[in-house]
Length: 245
Image (cartoon, rainbow, N blue to C red; front, side, top):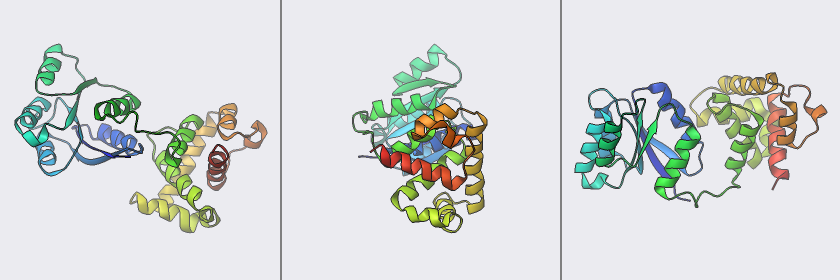
């Protein structure tokens, strides 16, 4: 499966961080560069090989339209699909963006899942993304259980479950092996990984959606009445995925 290389340019660092985390969860996508102003965005375009650029209309130094104009002038950049973002639905701006080569226009706020669909549509990847990979199954399980996609615990749990699915001996030394392995992947500490996973599980059990959780894991309600430890939750997730094959 081909990986779509994505760059993002927006002066809203929080939004960029959220988009980056969500996009990197997709099995066929990778964020390869981020920029927080128009000049930095131009450097990315000139120096990084990308397929899709997610570009905000209003940015410091150079706005999105100016960046689009520059892309239009560069033959090598014409293959880039540009998704424009704006908090203002001004028809004149949208028309100008289209004239300058924007592939799609998204109004803020928007659902991240919808952004993913548009990227797949623009790159012709809709039929390439096959369901059933381990990572996809883990993401879907965590989503159904009710863990918010934007929190660190979601990302760390996804990786931890994937590791254990590949090698169940990780569970025997969760503190000494599993947490450090996840931490290394995301340049953080084992303690933060453990706390973030615990927080994610806490959120789910606070909502008391036991029937939903039980259905996701194919367990009876009584087995899930009490909140599980991190290791038990990960083990249940791995067990559920293996039995659904």
